Length: 454
Ligand code: NAD
Image 1 (cartoon, rainbow, N blue to C red):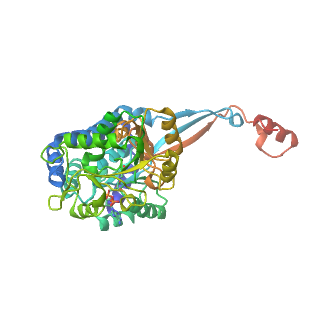
Image 2: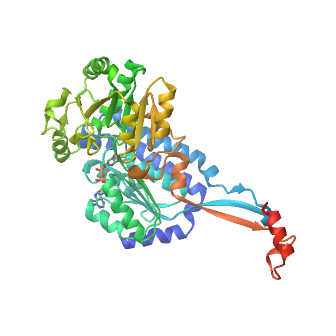
Image 3: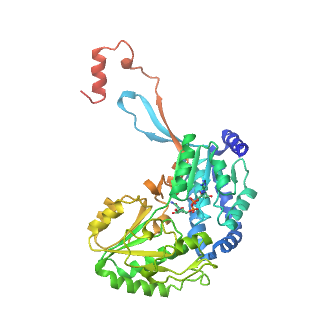
């Protein structure tokens, strides 16, 4: 690994990646490599999760293609020097910032959307002009192998290389000095990555998880709320970092909401055969999830099959913040519902917990909407929808506090892998001698006046 990193550093130092055409070519190469290997990607993810072509395209490939197309279109604009104003003290001069690629980058992926979480950060690294070592999650082994095959047969390893492996290989990578580490995964492993990065003062982006709440107030459009909620929660069998983890439901609409929820889940016909339901990633996670189901609180579902790694869409009612299911991110198809009669109380409860990656508000009341949006700190979210904010690359995606550091997609991704050099370019026309010796009272008073101070 030290040799691979050294070779990437040597390549970076040739300045080849600073060329905008080079970046465009590499983005196109990535696009073509993925496009011509779509069937390989569909087959691999089906083997790992029984994920359908429809879901794989809409929740993984579409986002990657979109990011590549936008990056290719905008790379020139994003890489341009940007003029800044010059303050009076420095006139005459020009001021500008120059974006520069950070250098050799390490991207570590998570397993739940294995393609999106590996390729999308790589797109950000490429558009910024970094070299990339990509370590996909080892847990879905077929997708990891497919990613490695596509990249390692199409790209020069001195520029873009996939290294497969689990904790030992990641630990070895993290012992090396990188110029940027981009990590997607759990908060616990995020801490390990941050500590390893600190040894080399390497800047990080940490895309982590958390328990994302969905508020449902008594004046929401109930039918649409339920439809959107069921889709976003059970998509990928709940193995979505921004899935609504739990619901905070106004007690006044409890019965109506639950009746509609039951109907919607029934009508959704979730099954691997229908292609709208995926397997839990492995037996360890299946067992972890089963242990979170408090049988006395099951309102819908609750059945499972450990061998086929399937858990029915499950809804738990009469849940409290003290229940076991409220202690950790669920990351599976179990939806606990906490009812409230005092909104302020539940807002304080959410605020007393680690900052979530997302927060959703289903309401038609703008006062309530603004109260929740202003009072709770979270990465990003939606009003009257869930999950879909990730599909809008016009804004960045990331967490805050325990749910992450930094953001990416679109220009935020470019910035995540860039440093902005601030340059003051002085004119040689005149030399105001103010700062030089002798330091007189007159000069001091003039300096203060120029600065607008007394
Ligand atoms: P994870 O933290 O277990 O693993 C992520 C990566 O870290 C994998 O590549 C793995 O090989 C590596 N890794 C695991 N243990 C390690 C260790 N001890 N030392 C070094 N490397 C190690 O996460 P996961 O189970 O793959 O993913 C689930 C988590 O990721 C959830 O918390 C979810 O919310 C979060 N997530 C966040 C986002 C986001 O964009 N914010 C997206 C997807 C998933």
